Length: 209
Image (tube, rainbow, N blue to C red):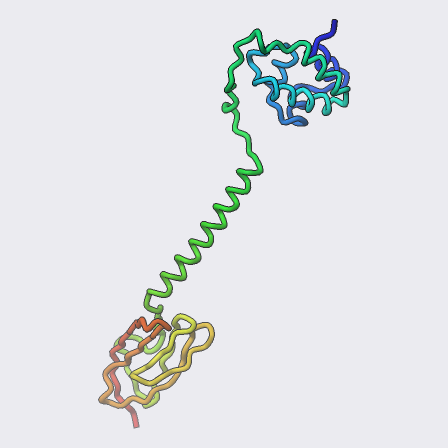
């Protein structure tokens, strides 16, 4: 008399499927596939789970699932065995759609938190300021001194209290009038939240005729 294990094993062999290949098609661990073919019920979960396994295996092998389930009902003796209600199914990590969703959600949340943190830091921080000209202790021999540099886009610039245009990349460049009493150039960058950064350059003015 053919048993459920013999029935499924014979169907697998007829399809020339290895247990590993069948595992890939059914997503059922090889240990469970082997236990079903060997009818080692102690190593299997409760009957409803095994019934689902058998149907999936029969469908994957393109054999009669109703006949397979009939063999299972006849051969499976849960009343005679102390079947573990919690079989060990945690040895092999299985990536599930739920884990994919949770991972993606966590990634999006981290990106949002990172962006908000960056925006907050930028809001409370004073603007960046770089002064290219003049350099420290530069000797100036003309009355019109070029002052240039870069700050954050959106910041305002004043040079010796004179407002200066800043382009959309934060670059500024202008000329200020100096005389021999002018000893420094003070560049003040102010952000939209009124945070300021100041750079002062000492200069020596000796105008030539």
